[in-house]
Amino acid sequence: MAAINRDELRAVTEKEFAKLTKLLDDLDDDTANAPSADGDVSIKQVIGHRVHWMDLFFGWYEDGKAGKEVHIPAPGYKWNQLKPYNANIYEQTASRPWADVRAELDDRYKAFIAFLDSHDDEELYAGRPHAWTGKWTLGRWAESSGPSHYRSAAKYVRQILRERRAVKEASA
Image 1 (cartoon, rainbow, N blue to C red):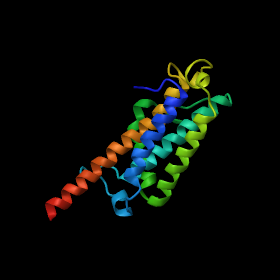
Image 2: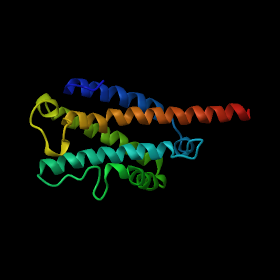
Image 3: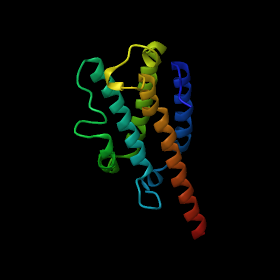
Image 4: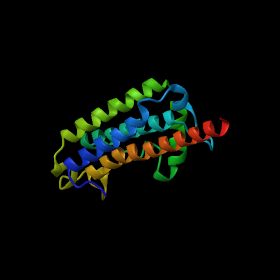
């Protein structure tokens, strides 16, 4: 269920980030860089993707606030082009050190909490609409860019960790 005020949004953000960081805190480079069993992206790439989308959200907000054109999801892309767009993010993240990607996630989380703390319920959920948010409130966009992304990343991390355990058990 979606948050309906800043306090709920902050609480769900903290909760989902805590769950994700609990999974990430003890990961070594090999585990962070290992792709899923079907050859999909690594944990590091998924986390890099989440960092990137947080940056997009902050950019959308700042461009909208400045009266600039807001390119959603990104300049030159439409929603139906997310697969190639995300593939590019994954590719760019693949060669980056895990420690850097992990530190960026923490930095974006802190920035996101500061963003929430600097906006009231009125701006996030009630009035003062932003042209770029369409039918969604600013709070709903924030939720999809923050805690929803943390939740889906945690699900992916758990999947890869289960796969790695199964492989180890099968080879033992």
